[in-house]
Image 1: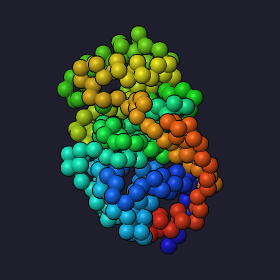
Image 2: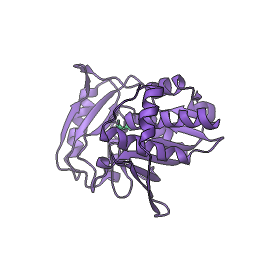
Image 3: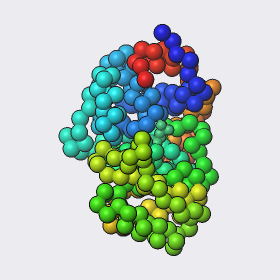
Length: 262
Ligand code: 5RP
């Protein structure tokens, strides 16, 4: 069986395939969540199968853990290993400083804990995720269910003193019911259009009672791997300033898709 992949899937595959080149045998690895991260788990599983690569992984969501285990990747808890060499994850937006918006897949809490517990974080993304300024993608904020409407009102009030273009806050739904995260919490999506000072916003949001964590990842990402639909990949390292352009053979993507399933 072969599968015809869309340009966006090819872009995600290209970024994911390049990112697993950074994985070395013996590493403790954080596995992100989302469709791009799922491609990375498939590419990693291929390397494990073909090269006998030995890695110990921590997943950032139940669905990533399930996928990884299904493909024969060893998954342990963060408490088992405590610290990681590398985390590879997707993002909803990244800016020129490699600050991120994450949480489109509602996994931002575990994603931030895992990325922060890693020596290095690599973000994999298609080129459309690159923005000059964060905020077009609604910022996810995880809140506890108790008193969530009060927490929402407090967030709305706080936004009035901050440099954002829009101040709309929505409870995220899943099939018309409030979405629950892996921790049983709720997600509020902040439709801000433009975030003038992401660092300040991230700090202020986390001071509001009821807020567990927000989806702004500030100074956490080290490298971004940007994929394009034609297989071109750019690797940008924020610490060294190095930029590398390569190309990935897309013929492999259909094979991995067919062999490992979606
Ligand atoms: C999940 C995330 C994802 O990494 C982000 O939403 C990107 O997902 P995708 O790769 O499917 O576009 O933050 O909480």
